[in-house]
View (spheres, rainbow, N blue to C red):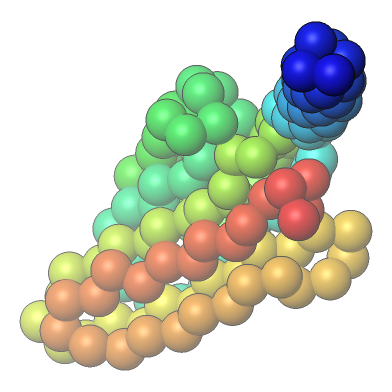
Length: 136
């Protein structure tokens, strides 16, 4: 009887392990697919006295995106980029002006504003960051 019980327990354990590995394999496949999927966003920045704009332009790794930069941008500024996988969309306009500055940034995906921020002040570092639509 002990032998039969031991065999049954081992069979259940092996079956559970196989199911667990299958579930893990499916999860890994989904992550791989999400990492390779691309999406497009448009960054828009308006305001006055903006010194530079930094943004995720699509290069680098998902958790370490390459930051691109534009100095003394002509406003309003607009840029469409293709991002990959779980990489967040981000645009960071920066202004330093003793008279004050105004900054508004937007991130648009498929015609819909998914993030918008505005700021005023002596030294402004306004920014917009949005989660990847692929991730969620």
